[in-house]
Image (tube, rainbow, N blue to C red):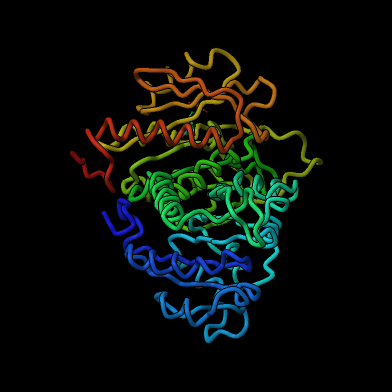
Length: 420
Ligand code: CTP
């Protein structure tokens, strides 16, 4: 336990402490001292009006780094991005109605809000203001927006306010802010439950050339595969997304563009051995034209006879070469008995999980932003009702992680190292 009486996630955490211009700004000095005592590396950022309430020199003396106040007058050229990237946690205490509004609206009006917009670290906002402002619908709605985006909000206390009034809006005690900071860090660690794992995800329908301009494909939009890749990267995994549809790379997310089943098979084969989990969300064509024409087929030459040949079954190939402790996830877009078909494919392709969806249902599967699936394993079939593709992605990742833990007999470690 550290001096704050907490389990110590703040120890060696880099904390950006944003201080906005309210009377409670004077309490930032005590908070800074307690954060440093808890082992945190504290970088204070003051808004211009906060400087009227608390001396920058005081905070600089107590913190791990000097106070920063301006987007432009710092030695570093873009202080908000470096602060945002370095932070393990950003605390705004006190947070005024203005800073809350600017953060919710994405208005990077000063160094503090720019830092809030430039960070992927968890953020703890501690509002403090007069009761009338605290209860104003604008403030409530802005806070609801922030909460919806995953920002942690510590409700103010009721008590004596500036000017002698009594009501809700008082900045909570330093001990409660420290507790909330520990909780925000703990929640973040829980969200990173895929850290140390490598995921290979495929997305989109493959395109099989008929001639120089035409191809055979299917209705897959690649949205579900992309959602899985993105969610996995956000949960801490190193992800490679092999995709037939354009996708943005991101932190821990590499994108490998492909077009045909053969290109996808090659891209997957080159990376599958190092992957802890492979998710075949792509709609791989089962057949391709045997001899695609190198030039455009012309109408005047008559209706072409297109002879098809089977493509390699990527998932079945992976199933045949699967190493112990690796989890293979397949998808099956069906129009009939989804669970029976998913179960059949699970067995025939040697997968560990098969995610089946009924693409004849409304708002499910191809092109939609929503999906409804049944996740079939060897022992169970779990239905996930109509949800966003992001929520389906989280459910698929939860199921894959459970399989991985079962296969490895304990919490999963990186790259096939069974853990006990
Ligand atoms: N799959 C694959 N390679 C292929 C075809 C499919 O890896 N050539 C994968 C898909 O990515 C998906 C799973 O296998 O994860 C099931 O795909 P689906 O097209 O439903 O399987 P098929 O074997 O084609 O089944 P069927 O034609 O009997 O419906």
